[in-house]
Image 1: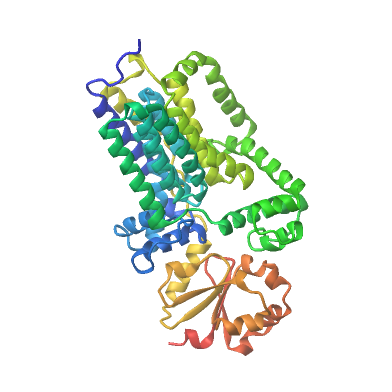
Image 2: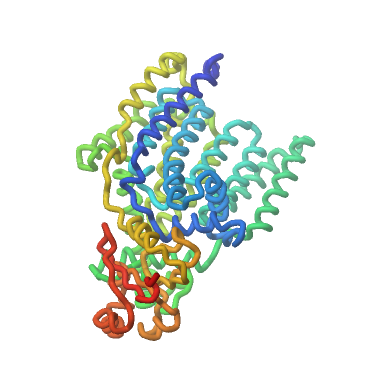
Length: 526
């Protein structure tokens, strides 16, 4: 018989352990803003949706409305958008290990193992290095849902909580709508199994579940978008295609050209498959290889070089544990028979997305952490007394852990060209309207409201006409813009670069950046 898990001082001891993870996280992310550049496009767009939530409303259900709400809430603490970006980066690095620890303890994993797994996640490449951070927020909802699920014993309540949690995650990562659909099957199965034993409390819970689900779907809408799904497939297929062919075409900007040349006029994944099934199969085959090989590097701590020795040690550790604790696996498979299907529901969309779309780091983050939960629960649950600790023991262990926690960046002051460009544009103190042509991803998000982004990838005509139609009076000439085939192959763009002073433009170098700024003279006049 397994001994009681909760000791009289377990809550206090767990609180100490959580503080240890928090302090280690603060140390680990110290100096991050001096070494990590601002990422435009996805993450900055999420930030923009958050800070403009009250004026612009919620974004489309397929574009992470819950993450916009999160950004809005923390913007109340940090109104400066550059500071907000880095605050969120740190929170998304530190909070998942804390929730992971709470979940493992709820699943009766011993304190030393729970703390070790959580700290291992904290210092791994996959935590601090994964961008955009929207996946970390989705992971937080997954872990919070699993914590709630671990507290209930009713199959019906477990299924209902899992279903609501899956729907919430879908409003951060749309592919997790698949988890919601699968969870509906669990709810139906629970209803059939427990129908005759339903109490008034169960009926009230079911009514609440129905109201919450219908309200979310009614207010936020369906968190799926055929256009976004095909965009994701197209860009990542193009990424694989560029690798196969050695082409210099940019897979992110010119993906439509690549997809059109391989799949004709296909506008959906199914159309692409029926147009060229062998090529889609080749794409998925490469994705499967990436799904198997890529995590071995991502889960390594940042202080270890991802060489053969490190990966071999990692493989011995990961593959050896199931052999050593096989008895625990069989026992815990039965003990957690309600919890494990829910965990599987949250694993499924990530695995499907990794195979069909691409095993990108943000999807692998979800997969690796949830697989870590699965392994820790199956191997380490129902710990006995020798593995539990006193407050003094936890403090000593914590002091050692904090001392060994590295500074991810420390005092390194790395080049940050995006941030340097933002600071340079701010220093110009321009008050009139700026129509800024650039292809780096949205500098205007961090500038005053008189800046308006003219996205370089929207050019479909000659540059002269594009310049005139969009009233462009400022251009950030970066490698992304000049490397885009829309500009490389346009003689009007080349003519502009050769003769822009005669058109009333001046050039300025951007400090700490390889980009340059071309702006109209009258725009810079006092």
